[in-house]
Image (cartoon, rainbow, N blue to C red):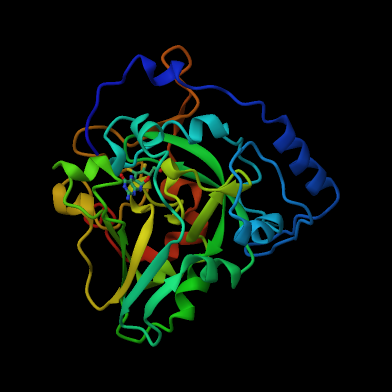
Length: 330
Ligand code: MTE
């Protein structure tokens, strides 16, 4: 990522939302045994929760967002306030400052939204996002997001298992990787009018990574739709990888045979690898990855914690990389 000296405003811009409504509801769900245990287990919620996200889903998605299934993912983590998660962002299409995405994306049009599916798959074509969402039950998953810049948050995402969606397109045996692309629309995305990155923003995964149960196609957070600055209307969330792999505002999915080019790797291959797994033992060439600043935190209370291997998801994902030299394959 770009190196920026920490601004004084980094801490003062955080407004800490009262999380009591959200937490009380979770405690109720736990006490009443609604939350199922075990990976992939879900319990359904009857009413649409209010979790600090003031946005309303469009009418066509109201019922989907009113029936979000709770999962056991991340129950132990303290959730970062919505106001922090939606105001301290990386979304270079809207500018390079942390507050640019929120400040400059309010007019971004996210409906209607289609995704083009191409490549090594039985079912290709252009699909309405609404249809993709409606075909599955939305789940809530509380995941840690660790940015390569050494800050992190804990966010309750709403989405669908990426594997569930990808399998519907019937990838062939030649689909060894999946490539994702963000919308390219310089009229709406001021950051794309200038240089810096080679637009559109691109990301990719090995097919087994993409099919891993932790990989999420997110369409919401904190109980409602994604704010524009967080990648509306649809993005990836890959909690064991550095945040830059979690590509926002996806318009293209391509199943491919060879490792695809990815934005940050193209820009600085010695700094940003294709895998980008969170790894406290492999430093970025210009800074340590051993620790992270868990937000909210600022100059007075930096809230620094130790970074865990695979961001704490080692038990789940280490098998994907067995036998691989993670220093070379960073
Ligand atoms: N996706 C696109 N299209 N453009 C971006 O600039 N930034 C990435 C990732 N996805 C980015 C993106 C980075 S560096 C991070 S850390 C996360 O989004 C940040 O997600 P958040 O703003 O929701 O916290």
